[in-house]
Length: 468
Image (cartoon, rainbow, N blue to C red; front, side, top):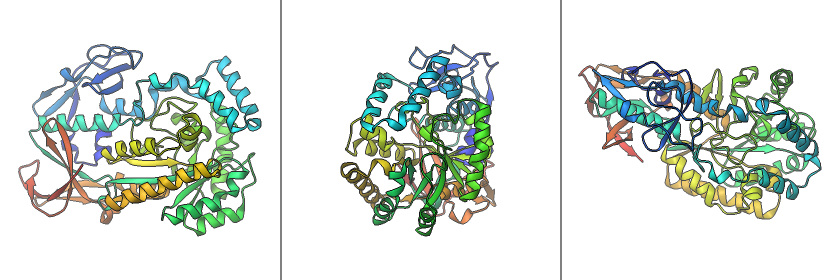
């Protein structure tokens, strides 16, 4: 029951002492933990709703203690997995659509190459009509997993009568948040503009990954691949041929995955992203990549609705999922008709409040036009200005993958009354503390050693500075 919480914080297991308060229901559905945290899964109390916008039972009053253990009417690891793996949204997966919807979808992707973007956006706007009324996941950023993790740790701390818990800080060297830029290359015009886009990125000191379509759309330029790598950018694989049918059924997916894996080997790519952000995380073990970038945080404007409800990377088997946590440029410019930075700024602010990953998807195809290109330059300027005021980590997806894998093997231990981090890459890790602040948690990053109470009554080192 405590696996998800320990994985999130990398804290000592003794601080995550949970047990079930009763027998879980056979059915799964929506319920609440407090006023603002919507959960999905089985529960041992109350009722479960089939829709997130229905009246939801609040299980918070059913959380009790037994000694220093916290008794929960749900399994927190299962609930967090249900959110991150989008099990609550299985009906939206391409393989589960009804035959009529599948036929319409096939017709659209057959005609899509012939449609100008001005035609496509009107078709898509009609389809997404009513998206603003969706209550879950929460638009424009959903941090349910982070909120739930904080609530659970807070409850455990109360049960154990402690006000400080040591953990491995989320990002290397104490960075408040992480910024990742990615570029999906959709057509030949986009491939031709990659060099110009790298020039823009470099002018702001930002490196990015380029996801290339290996079949069908354009012939990948070997010279471009070499140039991307020579300039310290990253090359990844995007889908197979961008026809919208990668995840139509499992048999077809497995056939395509074999070819996708081969292209990954040919281009030395460690990362993958599915076209149009179609995804089925239950099938991703067929992909031989270190990380995936196909899951949006909130998918109200994507053809496949859902969202992972987290602003942190997470593992799906052996693959690290690096979620897309902000709105794509195409959706912003062509569906919302918004050429300002307001939405991206609001999303960045919300994500940083949770010390999360701020990840962007900007297509070279859609920033060729001057108006859009100027907005993108404004975004980079905003991020760099933010980085001059805050300690942010500007990273490539591959660097996030390397860090998160190292962090997943770290642990906080008590040696002679001192909290210490052990594990590979520990020289980049920073000890942090979750502390009780009234009815919520706040985080502090270790700065100057000082004594704090250890679980066994020993004294442990841990001076700190607050992170808001």
